[in-house]
Length: 99
Image (cartoon, rainbow, N blue to C red; front, side, top):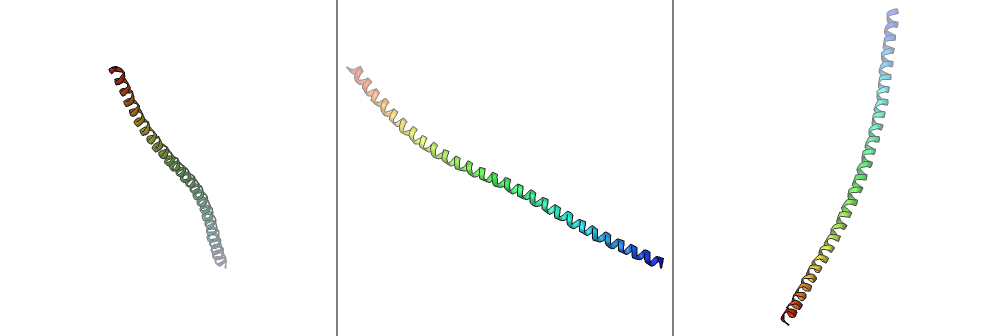
């Protein structure tokens, strides 16, 4: 009789240990999943911010390229005008020296 009670108490203890162990494990798994979701959310938000900043930089670079091309066109026109002015000055100088 006492042996059966001891076995019964042992079996009940084992059952409770397994039950609470599994319950604790599920609770820990849930917390781990929640932490992973929070971390992934933070990472995704930071990546979105980086992507937005990168897009802004690309836009600014594109604008700068357009401005540089406009400046190049103006420089070319100014160089041509300067050559023409030098040519006119050379012509005027030749006229003055021949007179």
